[in-house]
Length: 85
Image (cartoon, rainbow, N blue to C red):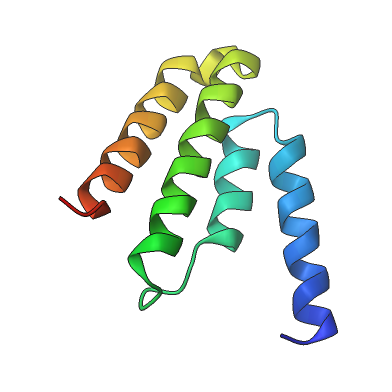
């Protein structure tokens, strides 16, 4: 990873941690999404973290409260499907 890549990653995590609206969260999560061929463990971690972010945003973005909760549920379901039986 280059210094520029690392800087972009840090900025994306900062944006995610500061997200107050559903759109801000979605934009930040899009930049942090693992590669399609990444391992299941990485994807599970992403989905779990995304679900937490969406639940937090549901409390701050009242106009998108239910939508954010639905996104959280989708992320939780995605993480559950990837977990080993």
